[in-house]
Figure 1 (cartoon, helix red, strand yellow):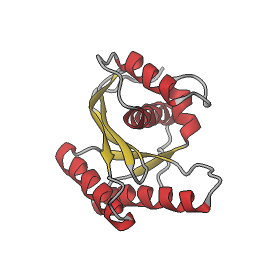
Figure 2 (figure 1 turned 90 degrees about the horizontal axis):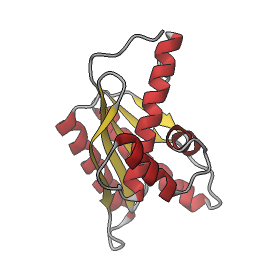
Figure 3 (figure 1 turned 135 degrees about the horizontal axis):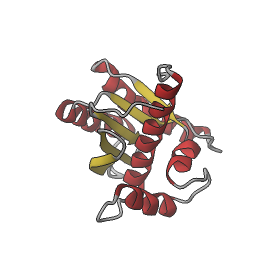
Figure 4 (figure 1 turned 90 degrees about the vertical axis):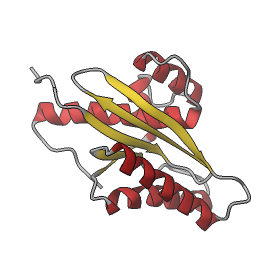
Length: 175
């Protein structure tokens, strides 16, 4: 039997993208997680590539300083058809990871399929299904926008992985 956790765990979960980076602050004491804050960092089309990266870094740094989470959970690299898309997503991820690294926080990576599996029960779920299930699982009054819902799903995948690591008496792997 796994012991019940009594100290709160707070994490920042991030679904990175150049124009719409989803984020969520999740906290758990005991069994049920709670979403304290969620949203999307929206970068306008006119903003340059470096400008978008700076905006992501600044926003994530602000969330980390304000909420003081114990870790960052981030969506892992996904397979894309275009090398340009892969580079763009990698750079957005890097901006968020750098913000956590500058504060000495551990960073945990979760594949998109794993995050969907944690919330919906299948890795090929649509964004709409993820948003619906995030709302249902957490008992939220409103459905979060799709990017924030994906970030929440990443956070829930982190809690699942944390529980499994505790049960195995092993540490969670970090980037």
